[in-house]
Image: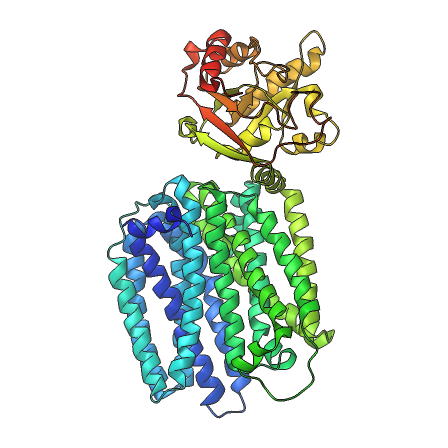
Length: 623
């Protein structure tokens, strides 16, 4: 798929962690599915349905109780040692669980399942909060893509292997031996995880989960993007749990497939998420690309609706095996829809996890992730309640239920994108930079990863800001001519991007002084500000004289300055070559464009003439 993604598997700072978390996810599902199969087919009781639902509830209950504590421990203590202790506990639990499987003790199995839920709840915050400590910023999204791929495939293989073992002679012994072996292998791999120092060793532990959750919610709400990313991830688990819970009945009642067919659908769905996760990393080009989240959400809605229309109307009572099912071409579109739902699910979920890791404070990142785990559990319980209401009370069919879920996903997406316009902004930028232009980046590592700085660039076209915003890892505030910022058709976008309109002091003193006040505020808040010192689009293709505004900005705000040059945009639909921009037919698609950044200039060396010369040198002859 991408050498850049899989190259992380060659690094000690990632591979042992990846193997450890994959074994954990595999083991949880091997053991849990073994219990469910035992309660379904072996334990003869009128309470089978109660036992199955109780098992599901006991596994998820610890996430409500212990996730807040787990988040605090992961922030307070060194993470690799914490992981090893959790894995030692898993070996003990799985040894006891294997014994319970062999003697078929319902109460002991339920107790062990609850303790496995505790172990998983304790592992969750450290699992995700350790990534930003071991990965570089440009590796974070690739790391999350591999983790999501590994997690879903581990869940799939654990579930399938439990079914395979269960049908064999001595199945309980095989499952029991398997969970002990996996726990031991997970511990062995955890010993190679590098140290991850405690970010907040002075943290005082709050053992009350309710007050800790409320405090974390209050702290996180101030960071709107992180909080709504948590809500969006939790919605994904609502959606995923709804699909996965209904797969068996959907297959049996509407596709006339046997359990092997149901497993095949689950496999296709999980593989889709794995593929989507890797594609997300590939298309993001090393950045945490929020623009893929709306694409993922749109795909979930479109293919969720299409699944309703593609479900065939079949008459009959005989269940079909996998060969017979695949021989019926009426089922192909259902398979395609499920695969695409999985792929777009990967697009949707991976950037959101990366946002939480990247934008949470170091001192409480694990607590924020713990809050995410609690909310995930809440939404999964809500999905079960919603299924009961819609399927049992309102008597919807499962295809109709899938249709309602798709519509609900669209509504949720619109709300999230309205609250955090950055998602839509990044979506527009990503579409533009992957349709009309092929953008190459040179020297962008010179832009500070944090803290205030001013970017200075030549001004060639109406999409300069979009292309720069799409290339730079950090959000950028653009200062642009008031006339451009209020252009019909683009005004809404520039307002969404929080551009700072400016004009000459003679033309409008109020706008002029308001612009400098906004620039001062943005830089004081540690933001990146980009200005185009020419003050207008070039009409000749050459770089015009730089105005003195940049000197005023730096005099008021002595921050680093990064000169940049855009190349290849002269002659595009959005430039003034051969007529006014936007007033001619587009003639170039997929054009090569380059953005090159120079090394940082200290504030005391900044002057308009010097920056103009440097930008001209960076641009060279390629306009």
